Amino acid sequence: MDVHNAFLHGDLTEEVYMKIPPGFEKGRHGQSYSDYSLFTYSKKATRLNVLVYVDDLIIPGNNRADSVAFKEYLHTCFHMKDLGKLKYFLGIEVAWSREGIFLCQQKYALDIISEAGLLGSKPVIFPMEQNQKLGLSTIHTLSQFLQKQKEDHWVASLRVVRYLKGSPGQGVLLQRENTRVLQGWCHSDWAACPTTRRSVTGWIVFLGSSLVSWKSKKQDTFSLSSAEAEYRAMAKLTCELKWMQGLLECLDVRQQDLMQVHCVSQLTLHLARNPVFHERSKHIEFDCHFLDDALLDGPISASHVCTSS
Image (cartoon, rainbow, N blue to C red; front, side):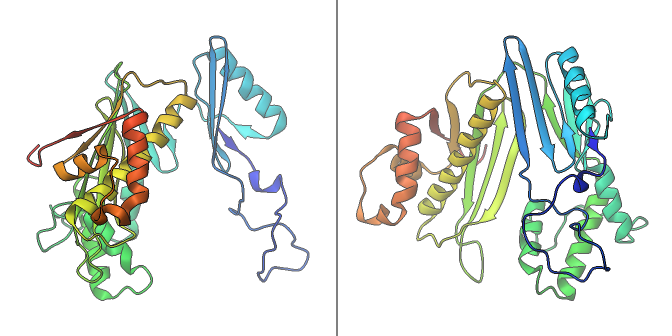
């Protein structure tokens, strides 16, 4: 659902300094200080969720009559338009099938290609030269030069757009299945940055066999060893798993088993399971305490995974 003239229903609480025509007192279009919120309602067998992003709403539920009644109530409060079954939301296209729900950004990718003037260009297989393996690594590198970009960065960004042209409809399939176990894999690239020598954390999270979350980011602090870098990556993944567990519980989806954390470093797993601190591990004591609580008393289990798999 979409709310018409949503920005005219409230006044801003903060001061806005800008040149405006005489008599204009409202905040500019698109400015909002409201949280992006998820609201849930559960009573007996009825379950209703409302996801709000500024003036766009998704209202899923297990009872169609209750969903229709709630939409009719919203119509009495605001002038709204019901867009029907979810097909497009915040640049993400949604396709429904017997296998599950397919999410992609084909329209958004084609718009970027068109704005860059590369609709007639030849696509490339790799997003960056110099034998870069992962596309996300390219974006991670270019995003560090948003304020002081040069011609080389512009040329590299155009190559990324040409890479998108090769498969603009690629996306993620959320499969229909009964498995509800969260599990994640983490890894780190120790001292990957050539200038700061800070490591890069990377992790992915699956709900059953469906990919639901992923991230690759430079670590905030310097790691003295590869095991320390792996430990920080494992701590970040644990934070994400616990957050997703809380989100699923809000949606009345309970974990069927312990959440699994997979790590390639045997030393990191030994340090995570051993609550005794040594001189070499005191500087990461906060991450140690957090992982100790999650592994010893919490709903998370850690295991080793070979790098070849």
